[in-house]
Length: 230
Image 1: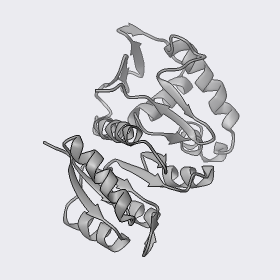
Image 2 (image 1 turned 60 degrees about the vertical axis):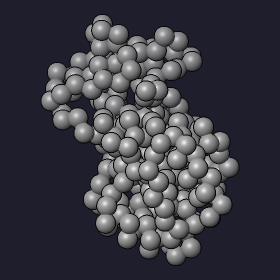
Image 3 (image 1 turned 120 degrees about the vertical axis):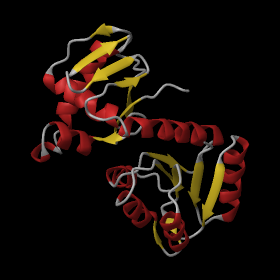
Image 4 (image 1 turned 45 degrees about the horizontal axis):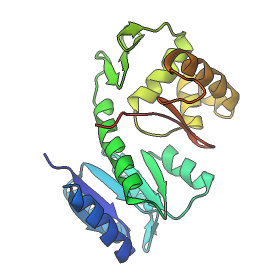
């Protein structure tokens, strides 16, 4: 099935650029220029992914994001001129899969979209089945991890951290979300925990922990378990 991508962007020239880029890759393209049109489209049929601008003429893109997340885990990539860290964190904590700042290269946007589409499969995997992400095979029920077919011993905390990221593979997961899921709500400000355990995970899973290829840092925002290109 050819994925349908909903582009929610009020700037018509920008929408044309995105439409051309997506069409050139064989995607079906749906378009909306306002919050109202976007929600109307989503109420009729949910696309396979959404590219969402935050600055809409009749409301915030975050309001659209909230509506979508109430009913679906469809991948959502924010496309916005707002490049501040706080805007990225807010959007990602609200449920966006990724955040691309304008101006952007078409190749980058398409790569982020492909990663978001691939991550949708990770959401759908039941807890008693394993996850396969690049060289990693993760068995949530047994709490075991294999790298290139060889079991890697992880501590319970290391495993929990990796599992949270694997469930959202390809998606930037914020510091706050990781801390809340692994350590609990009272630890959401303690980013030092993350740095320590991420360093330990990289030592066990990366060929070169100083140049990670799996566990990627988004400075000031969070971490992403990279999904290899299809």
